[in-house]
Structure formats: C-alpha cells, structure tokens
Amino acid sequence: MRLLTHNMLSSNIKGVTNGFPLRLQVEKSVEKEVDLNPDFLKNIFPKIEWKALVDASHALGYPELPDDAEPSMLDSHDFLKKFHHALLELHVEEGALICPETGRNFPINKGIPNMLLHEDEV
Picture 1 (cartoon, rainbow, N blue to C red):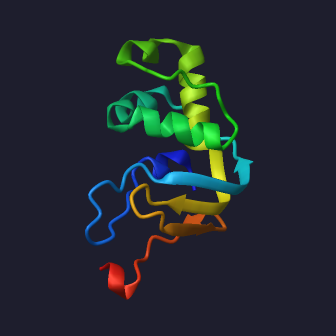
Picture 2: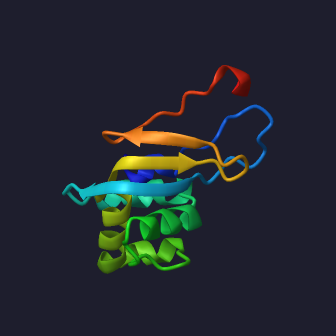
C-alpha cells in the first residue's frame, strides 16, 4: 500500500466522527522505484493531507519531508523528489491501519489494506 492510498483512507465505522488519519503500524515495508512525474505531483498536492503524509512517512522510517509544505515548494526539484519518494515509492507490505477514535485495527496483508467492517460496525 502506497502512502498515497493511506492518505485517502478513513475509518467508516458507525458512529465514528474522527476516522482520519488512520495511524500506520508497519511490520514490513519495501521501496519500489517509480518514474518521477512532476505534473502528477503538482496536481495531487492540493488533495494531500500533509500532516498525515509526514506522520506516515515517519512511521516508515523516512523523515525527509518538511513538517509544513506550500505550493511554492513544488518548484524545487529536491522537494519534488522527496515528496515523490514518500507518496509513491514507499510501500507497506504488512502491518495495520488503526482508527484514531476506536483503536480498531484494519490489517494490511501483501500490500492490501482490508477495510471491511464487522456486522456490528455498519
């Protein structure tokens, strides 16, 4: 699971009002090289919840992203490389996503998060 995916997931358990961002628990991660596409990064940047991305990248052992970011930083090739690496090249293979409100674990197996709810959570 890429951090791009993580940044767009939230807990949909019935009654949960604060289901984002899901806390990331990493058991196994890998890096997969992807071609840098500055246009994609510039278009996706406004949709990214920056603090959630920074926290997730720290959970994966990648502390290179600045705590805050603004659109003007997209003109820096160095920033684009770091943003690209965190968003698209870091993958969680095994672990869990944890609801910030309930503590419910959603497992990640073979890079796929299982966000299915139990019958009493719907």
